[in-house]
Length: 65
Image 1 (spheres, helix red, strand yellow):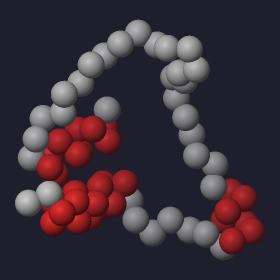
Image 2 (cartoon, one colour):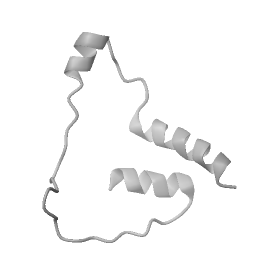
Image 3 (cartoon, helix red, strand yellow):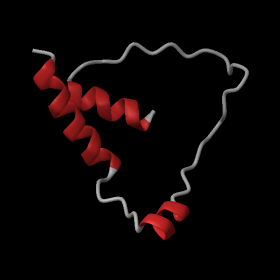
């Protein structure tokens, strides 16, 4: 919900949300483990989610005029 709330804020629109019961294959939580990428590829994230969603929203609006 945090991501949806941020996108609503940055896009200036309310998302249409339909809350349904859990479906087969749904998971309650997911967690990214980037330790292999950090070790093998020297990867280190440089953009926080809040900043990346703002950048994406700004970019997306240039195509949706």
